[in-house]
Structures are given as C-alpha cells and as structure tokens.
Length: 543
Image 1 (cartoon, rainbow, N blue to C red):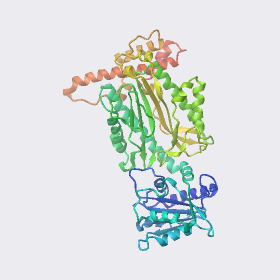
Image 2 (cartoon, one colour):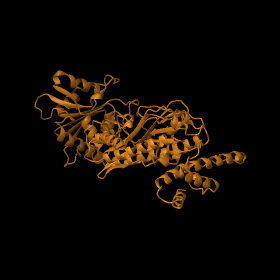
Image 3 (tube, rainbow, N blue to C red):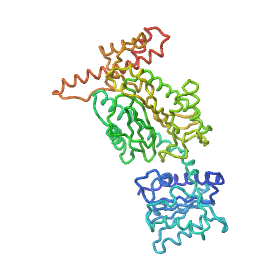
Image 4 (cartoon, one colour):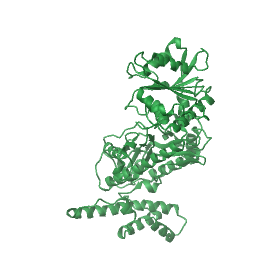
C-alpha cells in the first residue's frame, strides 16, 4: 500500500471539522456531537458509496471494515486492522497547530475481547465533554446497518454498540453536511477533475466520433450495445486512441449510452439496447473516471435533419447558454431550472417546457452523481466557487410531423422517425466569473450535423441553400484536402483492395461535401445581409 499523504489528510479532515463546528446546529448536521464514518466491506456492485468517497478524499485509498469518529473537541479516532493502522501511523502526533483537529488516536482490532475495549474507547471519544448526557452521533444513514456485512466485523459490533440503550446514543444523519464539504474542490481535486473531463472529451472526439462517422459512411450495421462496448473499452484503455494514460488510473463511470431510432431515455440509469444504430438522431453519453474523479459528456448527432429538428436543437442550445449563466456563485441551484423555463417562454416555445428533464444536472467529483446536490426546480443550496457540476439538458419525446418527414430524402432513416430526443451534457466548473466548461467538444449545429441523403425536393428558392450547395459541389470537384482528410479518411488499403478503396474515397468525398454543405448553409443564413461574394469568401475559409 502506498504512503498516506499526511498533509493532505489533515488539511481535508480540518476542512470537515471546521464546517461541522460552524454549522453543527443546522439541518445538514442535525446537531450531532460527533461524526462517525463507518466503512463496510468492499462492494464492487456499488462503487459510489459515500463512505468510500470519504475514505478516498481523506486517505487516498479505501480502508474497508473501518470506523472513524471525529468529535467536537477535535479528537479523531480510528478503529481498524493492524495493517490499516500502520498505514495511518505516520499521521499520529502530526496534527497542525493551526487546525481544529487536535490529534489522531489509532485502535487496533482485538479479536480476543471482540473489540469490547475498543468500542468503549470510541464511545468515550464520542461523548467528549458531554458529561453523561445523551449524545447524537452523526452517520451516513443510507449505509448504517446495511445488509451484506459479515458477523464479527468491526463495524457490525460498533453499530450494535451505538444502539444499546446503555450507550445513551441517538444516531442522526450527517450525509448532507459531508456532501456540501466535498462538493467544493481544492486545487488538487480541480486538477484531477480537469484531467478527467479532458479524458471524456477525447474519448468522444477521437473514439466515438470517428467510429460513428465510419459506421454512417460505410453503411455498417452495428448495435447500440456493441458501439457502447467499443467506447467503454477505449475509456478503460485510452492507448486505443493514442492517449498516454496509466490504465489503472482510469475506468468508466458507467456503461456508455448510445441511442437512436426514436427510442431515447436520458436518465443516468438508461442503457444501450441491442437494436441497430439508425442514421437519424443519434445520442451518446459517456463518463470517464480519472484517479477516482468522475466526468460526463453527452452529445446529439443529427443525420439528414429536417428543418424542424434543426430549429429545436438550436432552441436547446439557447436554453443551455441561459442555464450556464445561472451557474454563478451565490445563486441557488434551482436558478438553472428557472433559467431554462424563462428562456423557452421568452422564445415563445412554452410547449417544450414539458419536454425538459426534471433534473438538469448534478454535482460531480469522487461521487459521479450526488443526489443531494441536483439542478432541479427546488434546491435552495447555492453555487459556490470550487464546485463542479454536470450540466445535462435534454428535450424528450418530441413529435416529428409527417409533413416534416416528407421533406427528407426517401432513402433517409428520418422517414421512419415519428418522435425524437435531444441531449447535451458538459462538465462545468464554478468560478468567480461564473460557470466555465471543462468539456469542450463542439455542440453547434455545424459540429454535429450530417447530410448523407440530399432532399428530394429542390431548395424552393432558398438562396442560402443554393449557395451552400454550389460551393459544396465545387469542393467535391476540386477538394482542398482540409477537413475531409482529418475527419473521414479511410484506413489504408492494400494494393489488392485499391478498387474498393477508391470507391470508399469517392463516397467519403460525397459525405464530407454534404456535411460541408450543412455548415455552409448555416454560415450563409447567419450572413444573409452580406453580398454573395462575401459569403463565398467566408465559406472557403471553413476548409
């Protein structure tokens, strides 16, 4: 086992203790006299237990079957096996004089008396200064007396001791207090959060995007589940996308979620199904964990999108920016939900309010999703500098009319799409200047839109569309070799496959030209007041 970072241990333990003393009488600490963090056995099925997160926060490691108490007077007592006590030994007698934590006392498990003396020592520490009166001991309630623990373990005996009437102990919940403290990251944590966010971003950019473009370009049949498994493998081994990261530093926060074909579920508990990916509205959500710190990113890819879908996506982008502005220190978490509703009403899009999620994000760190710090319509907790959230917005169950579908090419999968959903999620750090993105993969319409089938009808007098199509065709005839080679280049082929490679290259040029056409159409629309020559000059700059 590696060495304990003593300085960091005391820095964070003092942070917990100082906030405990300051707000002890409030609802987050429920007037507890003492905090008791009870860590049970390792649980691979539930990697986000709060007690495990506290251990990683304080020790840098998880110490199963361990009891830690922290009293008002500043005494910290730990009951654990001999090996774990040896790991903590370097911190004994080294409590900083400028902190409220006074000392660390280690108790080694004693099988001889089944820890009877150790439990008395823990009770004495919990009662420090209370002179025989009833004492409130703060625990993580959801984990207290959890099933699955082995009889004879340290924690089973301690939990029984707390409930004995002679102990004069009342157990109260302090989970909210712990959550609020851990939500505000120190510099070391913010650096790890940044690295985790960069990892998620790169997996999306260099893993999923090239792969889904290959699938679309080559008309491959692949299931959502299989594609999600490929992404998961990249997260677990970033060398697959040429990232130099130690494999034991990284893991997936959850199994990636890929959806298309009209069936969308944007809850964090959603799963990728076994159906084939459809080339219509494709959504992807993935989360990487770097040195135990979590991140999450989600994007929607639009293939042959009708005007209605593009306009709705642009509306979602507007909502997203409004929500980001609400993520300012001093504002309540519920301001994010309020900003979303306010924006939709201001844009005369009240019908989309019903399509918004009830929760628009959550606090992220060692815990992937803290259920006590969510961006909903009710939370009065305020944003503080140093917090990190995943801002996740979506529209679900939006109907796509038959008239809208009639405008797309008869070969397009969008023809079969009667309803769709859209999602965007990014990591956001709360700074003195407001919310700042930590995941920066593009989400503008021109970044996520693909056209692989031309519309059946002509542009009907749409001058912007005609201009975009003309320039795209010129690019196909005389390609500059810019974005095409970087985004959709095929793998090298052997001489024997030269003919097939040439055909693939031709199709890639066509796909990229059509994608460029979408980008150019957006540019032309935004530059409608300028003359045609100016539009053409700007369009050429895109490549």
